[in-house]
Length: 91
Image (cartoon, rainbow, N blue to C red):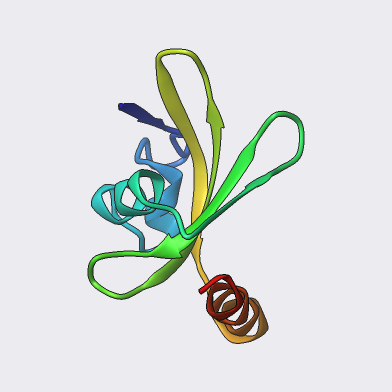
């Protein structure tokens, strides 16, 4: 799967860097999401745990030949608790 990243116009780097997230962490979630949802305006939201143990929410837009990652953020607090609760209910 080819993955492209939204580039921050100020830095020229992927926007995910502003949230202290790496490409490999983003790819972990996209390859094996714990949960996927429909987002706004054709986007999708993948939520899961990286191999290193971080919980992330990745917002992306799929297209026929690749995935365009808009942003990714670390889950903390109530959203993390809710995700873990939903995962327990699935099992």
